[in-house]
Image (cartoon, rainbow, N blue to C red; front, top):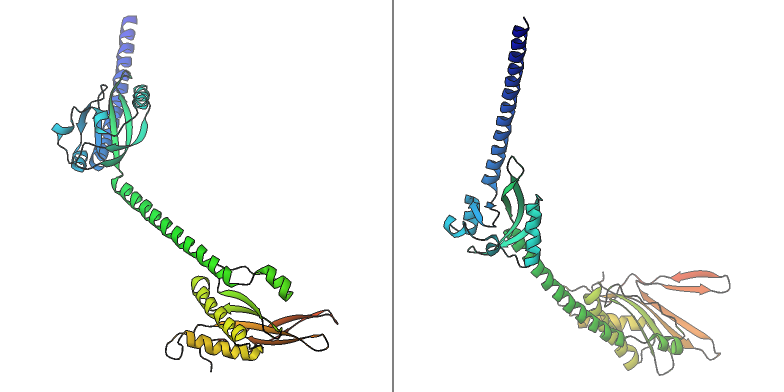
Length: 334
């Protein structure tokens, strides 16, 4: 009885083992199929290489051969280091030590033996046998050649833009120096015209400017001017306006603000040939003339082309303003 029982138990154990082995085999078959599908997908979509432990290329797939323009004879058996732009020998030795220790490494490489230099991002993956011994290195590549080309083109364009920008800024800085020389110094304004200045150009050169001069009868004329546009276009108009004021006040000795604005209007129209062109540029101006009377008091005359005059009245400590006219300097008025 004991012998029969023992035989039955052994048979049951064997049946269980066989079932477990069947399950294990089925699982292994499933995993192998999955792995095979993954490898096929990688092989179909990415350039791949295999390296042996002597650093020799043992295989290359069709995509790699197509991209490089190489045949299998030209690549198989080549030393890995002779094919890629690997320069530092010490670093290369460390790289292989890390691979042989089982570490996966990703590096950007340049393939230098093909018809053209190809930029690759390469994942180096050590492959082990069932005993855990590494027996070859799988290399899965991503082609970066086109993106690198575009990146270099963008860098070149950026460098060209940077150089042009530097050149433009240098030109603008020089133009700023010229424009500043056209303007009266703050010290001169303070000492000779008893005037404080706040002047901050929006750009390096400005379409806004200030102007001051004395006539032969000691009338002090001061103007604040806002030209059409900013930067370079406004700066051109500021030169026209400044030179026109020099001619009207300093040369022709006109010291009545309303007459100065009328002459300035005609001068700007003439300078920009506005009667015969579609140009409508101009400037808004606030201009004051300070005349000393016989009793020693100062008479202030003001005229404004769109710009007002703000003044502070001491008697009631109030800030007031006088509107300028709706007419601007230059352009066409209806």
